Each structure stands twice: as structure tokens, then as C-alpha cells.
Length: 148
Image (cartoon, rainbow, N blue to C red; front, side):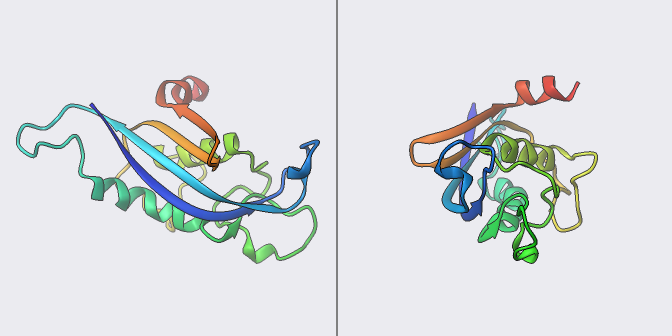
């Protein structure tokens, strides 16, 4: 069975390589959906407690909420950038989703004391909606294959 927990946050980004209006500073009401797949525990009746999913994911969402994602291409407001995102990340939905996956999986270089990764999340799929009609989706199988 697969569970899904949804998280919402507000954040800006710039995509300077984009040929259209997204090359300018703009913001979104982002939606992150985290899926966890597993067997139903006969004792609890749960695959996983939704509260446990929230304990792991919410600190990551809090790092992005009301921040600028990725880098500025000048020295404007450097302290508004989301902590923990690599300084050179190109903040497309796809790259942001890979960063979230790394944090949830227990990365080599992006784990931090500011992100609660004490209980790594056995996620099966991640979905990041940039708008109400556009989303990037990453499966665990795709992520694991890219890490090899």
C-alpha cells in the first residue's frame, strides 16, 4: 500500500536559462507530495504514521518556505536564500526534487543539523508541484538508479 502526505510552501526562484518569463525573479505556491510504500502493520493498522512522515519532511519544507530557492545572479539579498541548498543549484523543479530526495535519503553532502534526518524516510515517490498544473515526479527506483 502507498501513503501520501502533502506539504505546502511559498518560495521564489529564478531560471535564467529559461527562454521565457521564468528567467525573471518570480514565486510559486509550491506543493510537495511525499509517498511511502509498505506493508500494513497488523498491530497498528498503519503503513506509517502520517505524523512520523511530517516529523521528517516538515523541517525540510520549513527551510524553503518564504525563501529564495537557488542562487541569485548578483549579490542581492544573499541572506534570503534557503539554507542547505547548494550555492550553485539551478532551482528547476527537477533539481529541487533531487535535493529533497537527497535530504530524505541521508545524503553524503547535504545532510545538516538543521534538517531532522534522524529518522530517514523510506519514500517511494516524490512530487513537487510548481503550479497547480505542473509537477515533477521522482520515483525511488529512478533516484536509486541515478545514485549508482
